[in-house]
Length: 293
Ligand SMILES: Nc1ncnc2c1ncn2[C@@H]1O[C@H](COP(=O)(O)OP(=O)(O)O)[C@@H](O)[C@H]1O
Ligand SMILES: [Mg+2]
Image 1 (cartoon, rainbow, N blue to C red):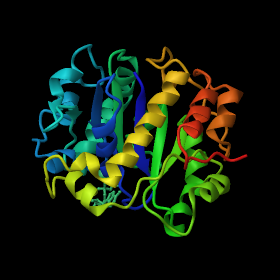
Image 2: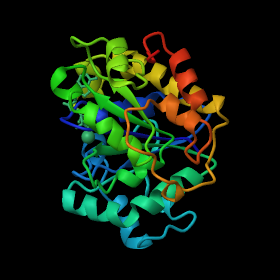
Image 3: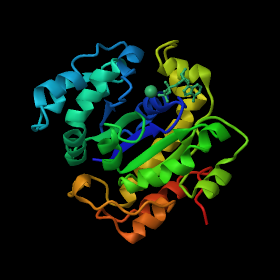
């Protein structure tokens, strides 16, 4: 299973919207599971019209630190329309954080060891000590979402080394346009930049359930770009063999904090499979993706 986590480090740049856009465009050969693991409280249920239970809270109550095979399945609900299964989070931040403190590690292991499904995980805003950190660290790639503006980008410079230090493999997803083009951002932050998602209020509103117009969603510029990002992520995984991992992220030694790019971590070895293919494929897969020289 390929696990892709999405998170921000500051503000509200569109993590949940981007996650829903990726879910709607995830390449069809493999089923995907959405996990609403935002410690500030889940918003997936409200946006999609689902109840907040079953979901993360009921799973935490049932599993209590260990997750038996098949347990996860009983706590998911199908999203309206496509039927993509989702593990929704509670709206209350205290409940969400508590559930993630209990379940973050076991859930990460369960997602990674599922041979049949990919996982898309909303980790919300990743602060130091976030209970969603085990999920971010366990993901094959941590997609950090930001708008290309100084007031958001400046927070990435100190955050990226911290994410590397806890074992995450970050790539940057820019939303909308700004004074800093993707190539400049990639060079300045020394990180892989995925295809940019457009600022598309109509597409975002449709994904948020604010405006439903049958048949229109897939024609929005947001979904078209999301499809390219989803393909980059899946193609990159196929390049490196894909599927579940044998080692648990909690077993691996934390690498030293640095601004080293995903590519360099991949060749230095981190206890996982080689990451070089990831970066090469991500970069090849997108006309707008940039990798620093
Ligand atoms: N690509 C986009 N284009 C236009 N508006 C967007 C886009 N992504 C998100 N938004 C809007 O920005 C706001 C925050 O989005 P959300 O996905 O909830 O962010 P986060 O999960 O980071 O808090 C919402 O009003 C949403 O509709
Ligand atoms: Mg969100």
